[in-house]
Image (tube, each protein chain N blue to C red):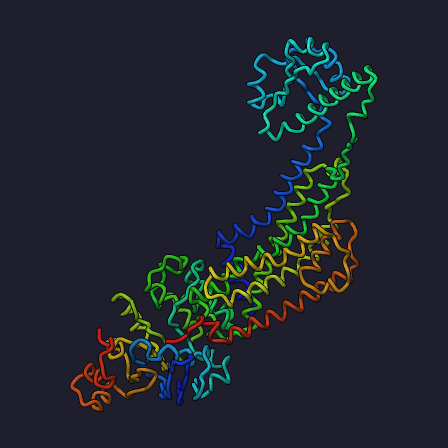
Length: 390
Length: 244
């Protein structure tokens, strides 16, 4: 008798536009985030794009211009309205050299140079920083030369020699972003069947259709099992959508160029599905059982949204602080699957036995939850809500 | 046939059903009449295996329902208090779902559904989703769902409650038809006119207890009153919204 229940719940779900919407769009959140973040990282990497420096009054400072060119900047003559163009974002920056630059420079005083920028524009910032560094470098070199000419060691006025050693290479950042994939897949697992899980439990009672359903000669176990499989099916579809989304998104990102050894191919996808499918059954059982306790559809929504955060904790932790997978962890639903997915994506999949163990543990827990939910349906408090009477 | 023997049910401090006993025979329409909160719905829910009694027994065709819930469910058709439809399923799909859950094979189920759609005059709504159904339409769908497996015993909780004149007539015609087919019909109502129009036997229930039962004649004679309405008032001790 599981078949008719499963079929009815799936038909009902497919006709529920709001439910379909949330269970198919939410899983795409991950791939879209990833696309956006990689777009950002790629723009950082693009620091090798030439630094174009429009200069106004370049003829006043020929040695500065020569220095800039020697350090790879392409020096152009700034247009007359360069300030307006920087403000409008047409130019990233401009350098202005006033007429008295030469006179002050010759006299050994501080010569005025303007760096025209719009600091509210994030896009221009890397270019502005590069230009500023070049100007500062020129300033330091000149002061060193002047001191040497006067018999003073330049190190005297530079008590510290500061060198930036930035370990956060774009490659590393990109790898961190990739480690969020399991997190988003877990979210898909706990969002995919959420609406259906509530609709066929708390929703069914709120509509008053639960009573009519329970007077049919079908065991509570079969009813719950049919609903459970329907929720799990919706969840698996959501995982597939998320995976397809990641596959498409990552296909558009030149990971090799970022120096990342990462591949989302057929084997990785199969590995992830192998880890996620049993988890889908577990999540469905957990969500349904919890939703039966809720008084209303709204209350169930609150419970299940909170439930969503719990499995995200290990995933978040792992994406920040990777730990080595151990066998016992496979027995903990969610944690096991998170580790399996992480290892698959790292290109070091765990042995098949581990997958089997994780799946087995998830199935045992699911079975227990389904049995519990079936027992709940025998309780009049659950069937009629608290305060049954009449 | 339905028998209820010394049924007792308490919810916390509230005694909902207190030593209720009655019998509803086949081919007879039995009315469970009482004000709101009298224990009618709880009694029907114990008969339909949804609530377990604290004491006493509910029997369907001689089977104690608490001990043989599956067999009992096969023998009863229930129109619950909340009609409970799925807004995204059509009327036909509701009836089919119930038929499938009763294990009726498709080739028998299809003509049965068509028959019920004819019988309850549901052609115009058969393939529409239940979302916008009127109250009367919802009751019809719920009735068709309850009758799809041709149960020997039919439990109807306030079937005409809130219906317009035409729907009420249709439900009454259906109840008479079920009686002619020799089925046992037990229906609850808080409206005296409904019960007196349809029932061969009446069980008057208030505050969880049976106060009188018998044919309308017997009840009137027992109370020593000229008409049924006065007899009800006298039996219950007040008119507690029974009339109207």
